[in-house]
Length: 166
Image 1 (cartoon, rainbow, N blue to C red):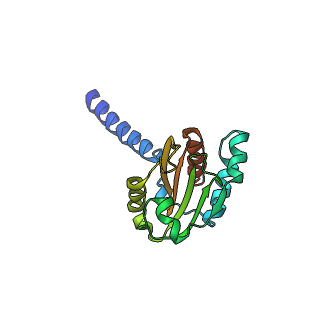
Image 2: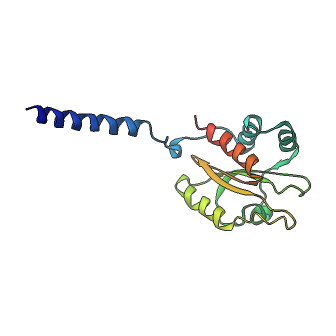
Image 3: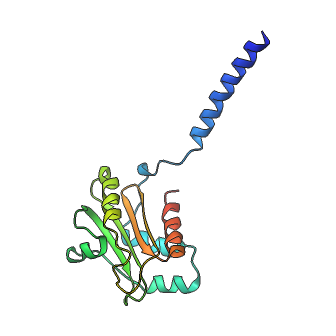
């Protein structure tokens, strides 16, 4: 009788633990939608990224522009991504290997495909004399962050981006 109770208790405990771990798992970011334009989202990222004052000043002085058709291949490495909104943040002078791009993908079901295209075509040496240490591609819902930069800066911007989903 005692063994049956122990087995029943173990089964119930296992069930409760599995529910607990399922509830505490990673949030489903594909169901989250970021509000505002890509330009506004970029401003939020730069305002909240955990970077030192020198980097923050540099970020604030970078040019932020919608991606024109003629610059898609240079900035994205491809012209095959269909997006409805975009912003690219780049230094005025390419001494720093840095670019931060936000894209709102037209078809939310194609976010993974777009991320793969960015990954396949990323060129962290496109600045010729300098190379980005890190290439990061993340998404929150239909918005993709694509950043090539010094690793610490790239991670700080990624963390600020992912924090927007909360």
